[in-house]
Amino acid sequence: MLAFIVRRLLIALPILLAVLVLTFLLTRLMPGNPFSSERDIPKPILAAIEAKYNLDGTLPEQCASYIGGVLQGDLGLSTQYRNRTVNEILAQTVPVSMTLGVIAFLVALTGGVILGSLAAVNHNQPADRLAMLAALFGISIPNFVVGPLLVLAFALLIPIFPPSGWGTPAQIILPAICLAIPFIASIARLTRTSMLETLGADYVRTARAKGLAERTVIFKHALKVAILPVVSYCGPLAAAILTGGIVVEQIFAIPGMGPFFVNSVLNKDVFMIGGIVLVYSSLLIFFNLLVDVTYFLLDRRVKLA
Image 1 (cartoon, rainbow, N blue to C red):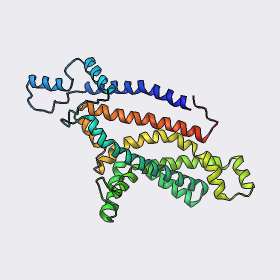
Image 2: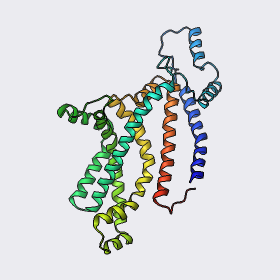
Image 3: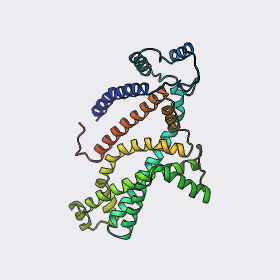
């Protein structure tokens, strides 16, 4: 397993480098430049500003200078947030986004597995239909609609939770639920399908024939196998939660990477965009690797290649 992990990490390095180069080039090829919003900047001053940010050479020279800095751990200066480095901004915002993402991930995984298992055990009964109806609504309604509805219901009409902000446990609940709802629905449908197939397997019928309690049959025998497709989905799930968090952070005024990413795109802040894309890409690779290892630990028939 260690050899597999090392090999995957070594493969990830050139992938991250390619993503970073492509992001830089595409951002620099966008119309305008990071300083185009400034009014009537004399050419000598503009040249001095571009030289400060190493954006004064040819495009290959700019890219080489940027990648060289990244390899040394320097993600550059933000052109939008003056006198602040991308490293400083990410050090402040990544923990916030990761906290929200991890909590939403756990809520989605727990809620989806419970809802899907409940639907499968009560197949074609009212509980099954109600669970799948709730899942359909969860998939159909986007975050930017769910967020304001949650604020209206639980912050204004019934003032239980604060409507926005960050720093207390109560402020995490609404954004985490908002971010998790569509993924709860997806996991519930996936779990239900897998659980129905597993409950009809021979070894489950044998466990019931031995007189084992239904709870033992479901949780000890059936769920262990039925959850494998959900584990495979956890990699894309983590990526979707991270990217979906951009919208949720904007809605609930959370000081994570989301607002900085949106502003950096609008203002062509090439270094801020590159830094955030690097973080997202690294997390995506890490979570996919974690899913592969977890899958192997749950089912030893799977071979790590």
